Image (cartoon, rainbow, N blue to C red):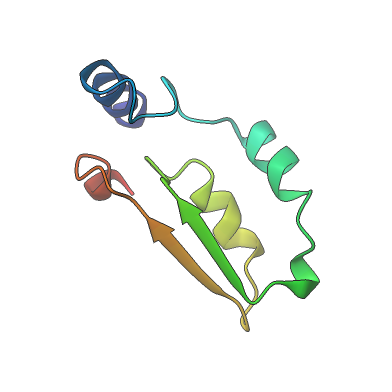
Length: 81
């Protein structure tokens, strides 16, 4: 529940900088990640991971030879990641 409150609070403070009002579901994460051709990727960059809802599913799919980078500009989300 902390993650949901964090996202909503940050959205209210800066709606033009926060792209969601609630964490993404595992169904959305899997639907998005199923579209990637994982065998051709060497680097995976997630811009704006927020509270990590998609990140945790990304990390399950990243292979040993791939690098994962998360870039979060909102300092309020970093401790929750």
